Length: 424
Image (cartoon, rainbow, N blue to C red; front, side):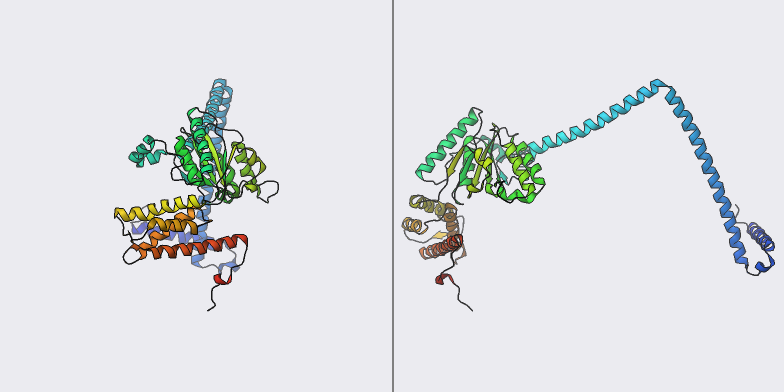
């Protein structure tokens, strides 16, 4: 089209005008006055568009007829050739098998990697070395692998009878690992802060095993995911080459009685999964439960426990040992090394520890450790960083009052007049 020539454009306008005039002449006399020149031009454009659409429609139909004819002839030729049909069916079958195998192989590989390299969501703390940790800290990991087994009771202060009991458990566990025998399940019960978790860690290190710590309070909020998480936990435990001590703190939070307690269906299903995976003894993992309320356990849990150990509150002799051990760690050692802003005033520190041991009756070892930490914090808060006897006495008095108040809360008693705050 030569739009650049003026006479061509003029000719096209004249032809369009003549055609519009012809359409106007064909209209009835009464309708001619209603038509304007612009309307006549629009009518012409609509007619041309309609002709163009009809041409495209005819072309499209012809293409469909041609494609259908070619496809029909090709399909007829394919069906009549038995060799082609056989080869096609075999190819599709192999393709389906390949896709299915690849999908299953991916799932198996994912589970393998997750079970050996990843840490389950229920595990809060573990001594098990992962590949990522080995790549990040090769020197520390090498030292851990070459370290000698520790004493199971190192840093654990117990009564003589309880110490003898747990030492027998440590020796039996170590010999079980050496002989690749079946581990027994242990229940540690008693008040909080009496050394149950610390002993479980030391027991694993003493036996040359890895340990993993989970808490029962993390299971219930998982809902429907609890069953899957429980199976992943035991799949991961079964892959440990050194053997795994699985320590369940606050086990009564989810191992409750199914018949009498009002527990959700999700928690019931998770408990069933736990019982299924721990129904038989294993040479891969050892189960250690800790609870302050073992009477709330489901009967099936009680049936699978082999050894029960009661951790009681420390008596006078154990408290005296604890009062000397924790201040030595948090006060004397930092003061003598001189690396921190902490000094100790001149007074009989040993005599003071004996007095504190008498005043802390009924407190757990964890509470005594908190008392030693408060002495350190009080010294840091002072102007000269010196811990005096009066500062220690103030901390002890505060801790004794707090402990007494907690015991009253536990017994459901109301506070006395000395505990009431004056009204403002």
